[in-house]
Length: 149
Image (cartoon, rainbow, N blue to C red; front, side):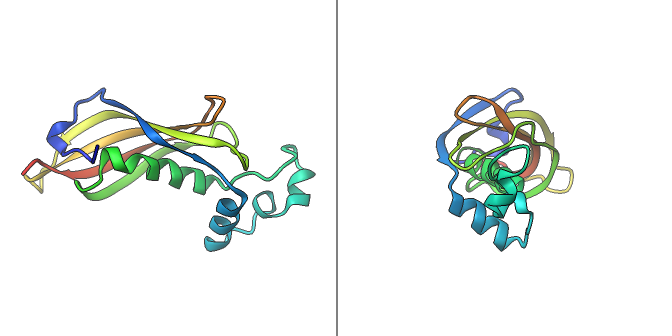
């Protein structure tokens, strides 16, 4: 399934995205260094071991980016004009190296675009769960999508 056009969505639509991803040490280290994030909890095994978590925490912005990325194939692939914003980002549980994550999406709002008659605005609520079905990340994503040609 590819992304849907604006007029193909309905409020309440839900998707459990099929691709799952096990987070590796390399994922976390590369993302942390590429984004210049020197937080010892993400890159220093000894500092992380001495923390309350006892192990390296996966960079939260990696978790967020992965959640959105896992959703793209079934939501906006080929129909996106632009992402307009991300709101209410929450990380209720930590993510650790070796966790296997999956994403889910619900449509919570639809709005016709006033400036673009060939597009509309969809608000997605994304969630990310680990292998224990614990919610580890959520956000709202507002996207401008093309209408069906």
